[in-house]
Length: 112
Ligand SMILES: [Zn+2]
Ligand SMILES: [Zn+2]
Image (cartoon, rainbow, N blue to C red; front, side):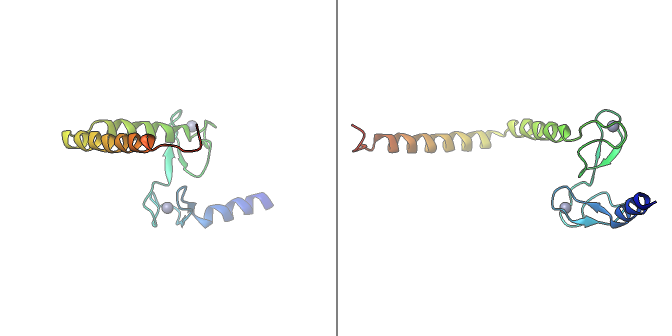
């Protein structure tokens, strides 16, 4: 009886954003503060579960492996660079490398 009332109260409070912890109204798909998705689809059974949960409501599978897949996808997307980005990247590496050489060429007095 008590447990039932408690779960009812919890569902009335709304959906907590996994990113900014803003409490959104029930039925919202995206956070009204930061715009991130409040639900995640289970990779195993496809059940829509709140992102703040660590396991699927339906089958109990861990949900946050999906986040890593998303990061992997983002990295892959970043790898498809435009020629300009490649040039900027090479220039950036050259500057960093030049800086390291410059620092390394400065004599270290106490070492030897
Ligand atoms: Zn948010
Ligand atoms: Zn599931």
